[in-house]
Length: 152
Figure 1 (cartoon, rainbow, N blue to C red):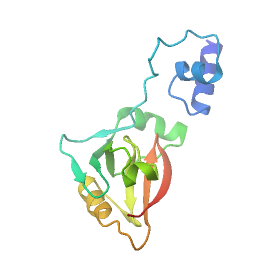
Figure 2 (cartoon, rainbow, N blue to C red):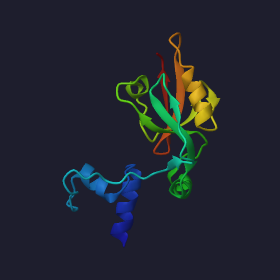
Figure 3 (spheres, rainbow, N blue to C red):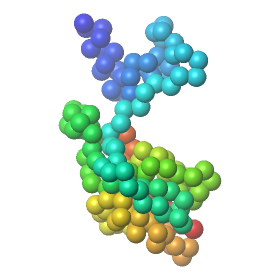
């Protein structure tokens, strides 16, 4: 039992999703993953509805983000943020957003210094990304805050 708790603590401290991920990183003697298999990602946000908002200029799709029960359970002990915003559903390769580092699963909560409540707000803000100046985007990835700047 102590060993199991210790492994769980190490996994959380390393920011990994499972002991299988720890085995892959540390090269431990745990059972290897089958060829081509990836450890399951923990889902902290999901789409609240099936509708998406397409941001053509950045070639990405968004939906209204909803925190999962897993995030609610992990927020306080793991110091993760719970916010309203837009979940990135898809980012086209070689798009401005992809080159800047936006990934599917990121949860955008602020665009150009303005908090966004969902996909419509975020889409409107992202559609205004221009060529004259950088637009700052704040988002959560695996519950942790990040910030990037976008420009056409």
